[in-house]
Length: 421
Image (cartoon, rainbow, N blue to C red; front, side):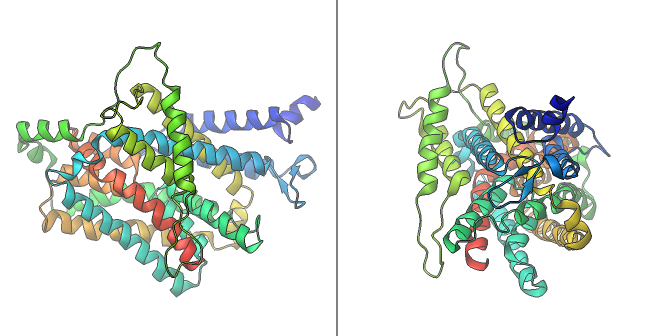
């Protein structure tokens, strides 16, 4: 029965494909389970990956050994490639989705919403820096906690990419980069719950009656805003190819993401990276491609498939990498402290800014729900908001702030690494 052992543990191609298929399939299946109306969705793939890697590491005689003599459940070079490629697919698809609405959303209150979202992003960054100095926790660890606390996977990828580049420049490649993913996995679960809890808390603080709010909706204004912020992906016949714009865009995005930008006082140049470059190119293609007759015609179903495949591959890799040291980190590495810090980073900006948005800036509660979900780029929170509201207004707030927020999350994650690591 050696063939079974080769599938379960080893370094051959069959083992790698088997592990990825198992982790993603089981993660998606378990992610559909709802507890108190909340589900983790695709992100449950991360935790299945952690479990698979942890238990797989219990068979030391059959593990893959890297060039440094360290044992791994899955070949780390394969994980590195799949992780980065999955991230590219995901952010590129997100860019194509929000591109058509990116510039339109700054009209009709969009500027106010984006300024509020920016304040949430910067508040979380400030709290992260303060806790770094108060506790002495390393900045790579803090960035991992931050990325999990605000459920931002591309920011995690950008931070890991920047840190690996920094380690290469120092001649320390292969030492310590995985801590970012481990910290992310620690803070992520309560990050999802905390974002939804913030939305609920604001509702109870101001005693908002959902049914009453629905009755006050203006049908004309609602239709106008929905038309302006709707995500538009052109329809096409099923036999028309759409691979060219995908890979042309990724090609251009990788080039853009690799261009170094030198900032005074920063030791390493800042890059948009494999997350930011394709995102920016996709947004521009979605916004201006049809006007200049660039081939950007991609079906909505193709974009959604691209996005989901990408995020599943990325999360599976993050889990498989983090799982090797996950339990040890909880027991001996301060993992519980990281969870507590993540809760602070999640709740404080959302509650403070959310309260100001509703009480001072008079933001409609349904729009506010979506804005809070979008400022943390959290699809589960948007799903909850739409269901709780009983209308699509939260989607308007989400789509309005999502592109700028995503860009800032990616850039600030890198800057924290480059300035403080």
